[in-house]
Image 1 (spheres, rainbow, N blue to C red):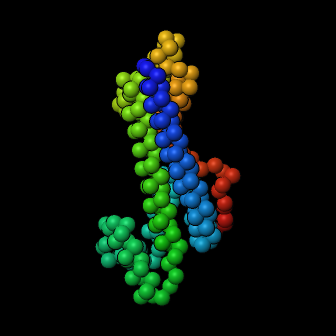
Image 2: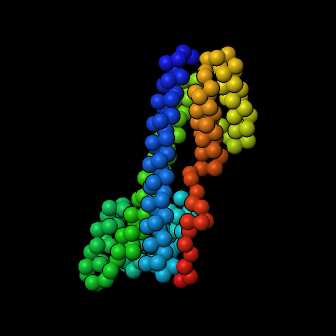
Image 3: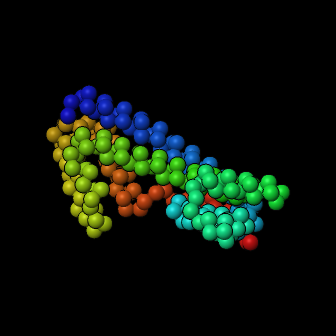
Length: 204
């Protein structure tokens, strides 16, 4: 590794930090809007700790709407989010009712998918960039849970050796370790979770 390679790692670090900031911003946006939905739904929707559980909860809440029940009764059970928005809008106009809470639920569902895509892009970029230093880092994609610990220390040892042999400077080494931890945390724990302190509970 040459000095310009250490510089590339610093540039990559800046890019990842921007992606992290964007993800955190979207999660806070979700929390604010999700808490609003808790109120609008009179507690029928409650915020869950994980993104996947929130997707399940939001889907269930939307499918329990009179509009979706009617669609189901008419044997219309397969439709896209875009088509569902059209159905909800038609139902709202036809029956002159406020369906803003269901449109909000749909936007939250889409926001979660956007967050998941952002996280996926970040992890893929981290793996791609770290492969410049650890050529076999992509092995984590095909590894099993019980192999993660061995794999982690194998990769960390490679980074330790690069530092010891002055192939990486201290800053670049720390960035690589941080990136390695982030990758393994994702494969072990999945997408970011929502802290209890941000979750507002309302009894239905």
